[in-house]
Amino acid sequence: MYQDLVRRFNEHMELKRPPIGLAFVEDVPEGIERAPGHVSSTCTFWRFAEQGVFYATAEDHWSCPVGMMTMGFETPPVAQERAHRLVKSIRQVTSLADLENGGLPVVTKPHSHIVYGRLDQFPLAADVVLCIIDMRQAMQVSGSMEPVYWPQEKGQSAYTQPTCGVIASAMNTAMPSMSFGCVCARAYVGLGLTDVVLMLPASEFATLVERLAPAAATPPVQQNHRWLLRWFPLFARR
Image (cartoon, rainbow, N blue to C red; front, side, top):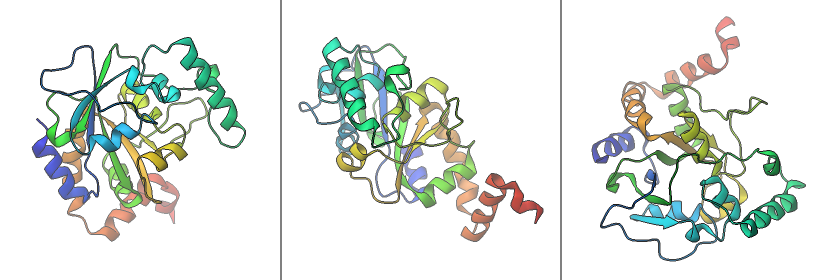
């Protein structure tokens, strides 16, 4: 379904890791196996998804209460209490938003399962596409699409914690979103020092691939200059 788009995307971006798809579904298509047991964090599924396609239930996300909440699963009171305790324990040493006051983005699409998998092997329509990219590749994307953003009252354009919040952000706003990666994601997904997580609504993926084509043919110096003019208009007046 996505093989040709992924091939072209890789050609333009020179990705080190394959993009993955996520689909939030009520019923799992035949032939897709369940995830092989519980994981320590929701984002661990992203790493597994680079190897193939599988589905996971709310129970499979139980060990990660914050991730379980962002994925939009019905969260039992015990899990909610665990999530709130986790938030309280790390809020004093991080910039994590106050989840207890509604600061946590949550997937609103009704579902009982999530299908994860490599996008070039994905057998159904994805809701979002997750890409692990470096800062150079992030610059390419920003020059080809509307700026990735985080729709909060404070106008934050990119953020760190929790990284899984980019999924709900992209799905609920139908706009791309980006995270610099929280501590958990960096540990469990294996993000490099310069890696960021880009989340795209799957409906925008083909558009991005098309827009990247002319940008990929532009010399890097001109790409950098174009990016500066886009993001810092002050440079255009000097």
